[in-house]
Image (cartoon, rainbow, N blue to C red; front, side, top):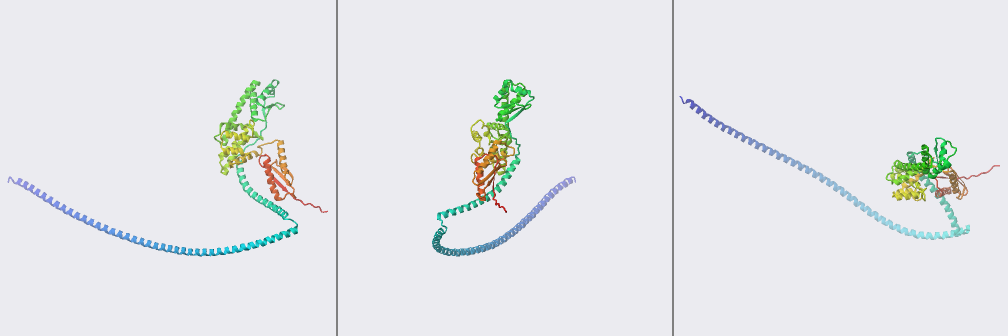
Length: 519
């Protein structure tokens, strides 16, 4: 009885081991059964998927074959249609070829017929020419007998008649061409010039040959004259101008044709009046100071001109010469202001015409550069200006424009022609220039003399300050057609023999009157 618990425990342990082992075996068997069933299920799924894939593949292959068959049928149909079209075109080409061959054969036959007819016509023409020559010779003999004129006389008569007809036709053609050309040219030219003039408005004042210096009182006149006139003599000697001291109250007149010297004298005299000490040594000192001041003004004026026109790259010496133009006048017009205006006008017109505005404004500014030295050097201002620009290696186009602006040489560019036009516009503005009475009368007389020199002119009158010449012709000597040619000849002669600002209108007048009295 005492061993029972041990036995029980032993039996229990043995039973537990047995049950555990049996459980393990059962679990293993169950697991193996599950794995076997899972493998079978997996195989079944794979086989099912493989069958589905094979079916899908077959379906896709079948669809692709159907599409290929359909595309092949479409292609076959298109090929058949194309072949039909090609065959139709071939038939048409063959038909055209046959038609062309037929036409060529017809043309060859016609050509042969024409050659044959041409030969027949040549024969007939020769026969007719012979007959015509015989008839003409007979008619000539008969005409000579009837008219009692030789062949030479008849030729002269016919030539004179033909010449009259040609003059009339020539005049008509010139009239038509001029009217048409003037219509177009004047319209565009007026538009460009008016636009340029509007954009380049400038004040004009004619400069004179005298300057007036105001005095604080009339006692200053005696001090300016000095003892025995030594002060005034010193001032006139140093400046090269004349001082006019007369009864004009509180004023001294400085007279001289050189504006530069006149300006130096004016500045020196003003400085002396402000200083109050007037004697030869002081006068010499003030004249030197005035010259230095004028030199500074010349430089400033040159730089101002360059700045206003926008011309860059000029040599400093040329800039100084431009400034010197401030003290140079032409017919009372300030040459520097004139050059600036010509530069601006040329630039505006060049822009309107699609030309080079930089070259145009450069040439316009430099066109009168020779006038800065024409008092000191021999030659015209054009020649001097060209020499200066060549010395400083200026652009050849600019040099040609300067050389051609008065017609001394032919302009080689349109910019050069624009400089001529801009120069004429600036010079002919109302109030821009003045001329002496003697020069004015002489110009009018020259105009009338040129017009009167033509045969058939009865009277001529220069009117509108010499900007128009009215020519009255003798109606029995000059016809309407000849009058057109004569007006051109008069205008050309005026251009060749005269110098004038702007343009001159040649107005031809022909009037025929028949007068009878009833008694």
